[in-house]
Length: 217
Length: 196
Image (cartoon, rainbow over all chains, first blue to last red; front, side, top):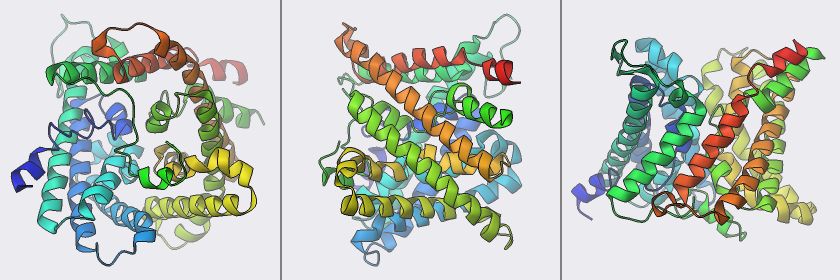
């Protein structure tokens, strides 16, 4: 696969959120404001690139049986690093992301890329893959948060539209999050002329192998 | 006692982990197709949540705080959860075959369930004591169970319904979840009203 394809597949064709339906928790929880969505996207992209590079470097050292705990430790290390940086330089963003900053550790996009890509490919390809997936994730969060902030707050990236527009609070409630997510996936399905994925399936799940052995899923 | 009840019912109804805090969405949407698997999954999640809290709380209070290593909590907690889940899986497989067959298949999925790590971190963040933490974890688990079982019922009806082609599958599932979540918004303020 060419390097360009490795990078670009994450943005549209295999978009982790809108096509593969991974990382749904942060997609719903951090998209009430465009600024926090972009912050979440950037933090996740950073962790994704770093963990992909390190895991790709260590792929011959990590024993197969304990690879998941090893991946998690690497990811958790970078998440702790990112939260230090945000806490000291961008305290507002740190507060608005709250616990979801720590929960990047269990974001299945990161573990999934480690398992499916970084542990099988070289360092450069893994870094590009991480960058592409991160950009795709950020793009999905950006779309979701734009819809929710414009309709729910009457502003975009903090710029208010003025008083003529009465915001619909529904869109910034949790219920509105589910609704917007469903609608965005439906629109993406229509635009790409692909049938929307029928179910939340197992084929992209990082724990797939573990369950398959027992006939689950 | 009253304080415990407030924590318990807040975690189940008002601050439902799935429907208002957005944690554990993947299993909520993935395993709610059949009632059997919904019950199995939520049983396993509740058990792991309570046990993980029982283990991570002392680790934080007696190991991390005295050594000024509070910032390592995410890393320490996720390791403890991953190891514990692995251990439970091995023990169940060896000694309780029946339980293993009904719960065991969901255990590997639980390590990456953000609701489990979430509840242990929130207990620390909210400054709960040990008992309050356990009650909060139990409430979170029961809330997860309630949401999953209710939603499994909703989905059976959605499967049978005639929906436009464009929103078939995932989109209609999410819109149904939106309506269930809206129903749970009705509980806001209720717990304080009864026990407060």
